Image 1 (cartoon, one colour):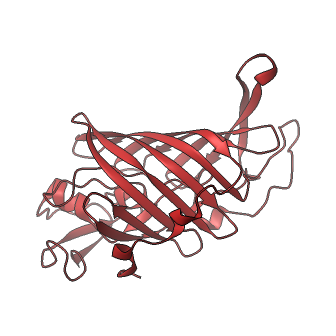
Image 2 (spheres, helix red, strand yellow):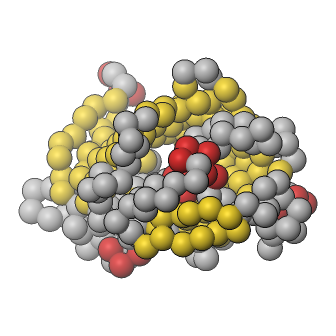
Length: 284
């Protein structure tokens, strides 16, 4: 499962204003927003920490706190876990020693997902959110789509979201359905479709009871500045049951993200979720 680098850099502006002391990263000046968008003439600093600085909200979620966009933390998830592109090595070779069989998620499926996330910024500010989505995954098409509701805590401000991602190009469109507004982002990480050979087996769990039991295998998948604990079903489908991700690098925000999958169907129930809304087509 995963997320992306955003063109909309509202996080740093809304949280830090005219900050003049950069993090220990590359610092650039951006002209916020494409033509016709609010604040398009506002220039401000953006610290690019290789995808893990304040723009962790570009890679993993974004926080908006402006009059034109409701405050929201958005988490874009992929299939199994997060990984840097260079870490992906295709399909697994099979079991290692006494480990359970490594597996790959179905090429197509529909499910419900719920996410909860906590973020600690370097200045001590904290944010948390909860969200639930109808989630559609199509590896054959190279697309992911999510439609649901995200709520920021503690005020529980809600935003209806529709997210479409091209897994091949990393292009992500986030459509705010209440505002009829669309933002475009570019993904820096890639979804992990298989349990990699570099993954470490942790332990197995049993879900359900009696004849309805399902075994879930938990794996540790490391990354640059983050680690994933992912649990997949051992029933031949390799359903991504749960994911816990911990992000931490020196001088950058710390974040923990959890994702739970339910109502899994190994099919595409509604192909129209991949149709890009008219408001987003202008950004193509």
